[in-house]
Image 1 (cartoon, rainbow, N blue to C red):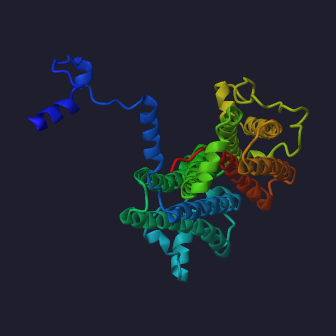
Image 2: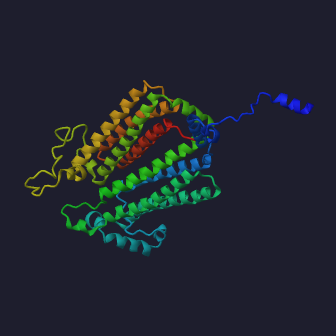
Length: 416
């Protein structure tokens, strides 16, 4: 009885009358606030282990090889060596001729195509060997880039060194490398067509459209490699990730970042107009600056689309912009000056924005490099496109793109 009374006393505050609990309260599971849910998702994404640093260094190494082959390709074109090998054999083409008989057979193949018949009919076997080895080296470096990307990439993927996103991106890049080789052969094939023999005053050279596609593809592959490598290395640097995330929260920095991305696109487009100049040998006319003949705009700017005694069948106006050497050179000049002005304007604007130190250094380097690139371009023009200056100008365009991508990357937060 005492135990019953004690128990009753300890629970005297509990009513014996049933209390109705609202169904919504009784059955609903505890809800997480929206802010906490979002924060938890972001935290989970940021805490995902990044790809190993060795993968980032591998991407940067592969990018440096692509930079090298772009420079080598420029020299190959400037020395008119690109049409010396008239076949595309992925495996068999790795071995150059060794005996005198093999060299003579290769030389005989070359003699069957327009470049020999129209331009190099006086070339000797020794001179042929020189241009052959230049093109052969270009193709061999391309094969090496493919192998040095695919084989380590397969190993890193097998060992689990890559995140799923980087693994998928690597497959894409490998496909682009293979496609780049195909573009290279289509470019060479365009210069081997017998149709050149039927055109008056024809010059044996590759199609400037295929040349631009080939160069643009190389620039795209290089850009992906560079940005990916930098992303992976930063994602592995915990302190850098936290610092950059804090520094890039400013609205001014975000606005500046959008301008930097637009500038990178402008640099790329300017380089592509340069490929048209190279493909049409447009740098060999109007070798003066800033004028082109009697004015800033050449008098034959619209020669292809303007009817005349020499042009009874005018073509559409856009043909001038794409195929008229005078117009193509003017387009490149206009794009180059626009890019230089945009870089200068961005640098002036950067003085008003509180940028991270890395981004500040990048924008300063960008201003310096655009000055060097403009000087190289003008010098190449004034001295009638000498090989050293022209090759340096082409490499300078990729260097300028590299710095602009560095700036874009420095202004972008990379999640871990």
